[in-house]
Image (cartoon, rainbow, N blue to C red; front, side):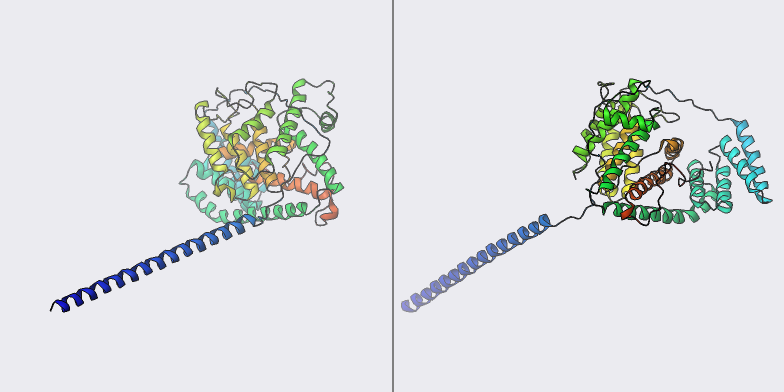
Length: 451
């Protein structure tokens, strides 16, 4: 009996030892599998990172606008801004506008389109926010002038002033998709011309000459929009020789040299970087625009209220918050996914709306716009001084709720600038007509204004 008990205990101990041994082997195998799995995952991650880092990202070549042989200075002028004249609503003008509207509709009915157009223009001038006038004026332009884009702008303006206007709402729903398709086609043509320009070797002699001429044109028109009276020849002389022009003020010389300095800063520091736009970048650009004329305000946010025509910018206390929101937008994925022209034009408008500086806001906004365009391979868009009224008119329309006319205007300026380059290097662009006369940047081609 005792032997039997001992035998059974021995069997139990052996079984327990075997189970322990098997469990230990299983545990060792699991550890081995886990270690090998970790190694395999680590190698897989390393291979993926290597492929990601070695992947060649195909981005448009940034467009460097600076010709050889030009150097800069940091000078700029200060122009005090005057308070706006605020117009009160005039009931008599509204009544006269309605009378003019009814007369215009009668002229339209009997087929006298020219008289009707003048009466519509008169009614719009008297009451530019009257929803019925805007709606009927848009219908007239759409029916008789076949100008769907301008008609759509008027419908949008009518809805921004009176959102429940049935006629404008129906018309806007009809024209919205048509206008969007027209805008996309315009941007597609701009992309084709941009690609044609980027295909030209950078050391091409014709391209180098075109860059130099376009640079002078860009500086000349940019300062001329602000009221500078220097001619193109005088602007060229200042940039090339640094010799003063007789009979012209120091302030006008400083405007040219300040813009030249800011362009060179952008070209040497910001153009080829893929990093985000920072607050410091904008302040550095403005610092060079304002320069030695007002070193205290250069690169500093304004501390007082300013007035720009009929637009009253936000108060100084709101500027830091609004600028942070602006930078958050400009570096966001949603903004970066926009077409480069739309992206640059919207950045221009948003910055000039905030008006963060006491002076130099327009020049700084246009420089930022052109930085974004150049990063996408476009040359700096030249806004001709001859169309200064359109530039400010479209900014006013944007303040009223429709930024699309301003974006189209910038797109037209961009295309005109591309036409200039492609004409100057026509060997590479046979599809572009030879329009290399003085009106290549300022002649026909900008949208007709019926307003």
